[in-house]
Length: 375
Ligand code: GMT
Image (cartoon, rainbow, N blue to C red; front, side, top):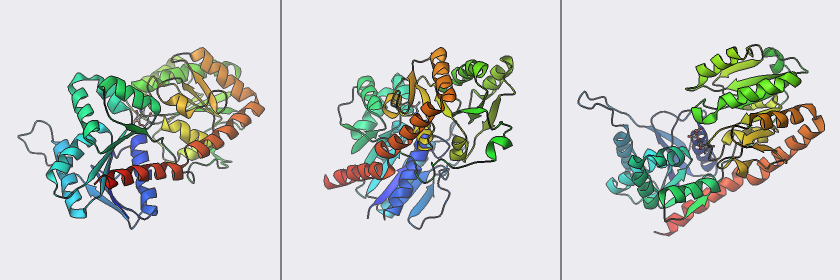
């Protein structure tokens, strides 16, 4: 049995989902898990006797212009390392979590190993910023082990930061019992979607990088030839400009904005195709969630996406900004039922085979064992 600390961004986001689901599975496997974060991770919704949560509290002293969150986190990490005698502190995101963990390891008396998982944004966005470049490189090199969620992210990290250290690829996973296609006889009707209408879906945090406008333009083309509705799930900085765009294109009756939702698998169960047309994506967890629910995807050929979607087998890849091509693939899937079923079945099989949670958890455990055996 290991004592494992986990730090992640607790709010909505793929990295938070992975960190929390990993913690839950490790607890089920008999390990003791200590989450250290600013609020309870949103997926930590059930009681488990081997899961503990330690909140990072920040005092607002008038002398500080900005509340020192990173230092409060560091100090909490050091406290929990000693108090709980942690074997491993697994941090998700180099910035700032790995930096904080390395400093906490210095402060604590107990010998803990730091495992850092890179999820993308810290490298592909923050890594570009020269202010942070050296710090991120330092955090990776000082971690006892570093993993990344795709080969593409490993290559990008090595190229951008000139990191001289092994970074192991451990793909993301989903909770298979949650992400299953389930019969939802009333859901379409509840959203005002006719039974013979096709459903396209996009789920994201509506950041610029997700290019939600490309999804809307694709839908505009598809709707001209296929009776369909577009579900837009999630919220973020681009939400209101996307609503404006939908108005301007006269699509209000056919595009349904749902905001943030919890029961994603139910929405996926009534969807025929998912679109993710991002300009950057180290993995694209939502693709795996969709595939697991038998929904084929159309996604951009960027970052780690080609490692998740098998072109022509589980969905289709398109070049960034190629709305015409994504509309053509959508029309194919929505009008050819045999083709849709073929892709759906392949998608589920691929999700279960290549990204099964049992295999992924095993890979993380191997990393933990390796760093612990190094003394
Ligand atoms: O960019 C996001 O959508 C959020 C971010 C996060 O913190 O969850 O996502 C990153 O990590 C996910 C989990 O590993 C990946 O599936 C996303 O592809 C990655 N985002 C980017 O690389 C832009």
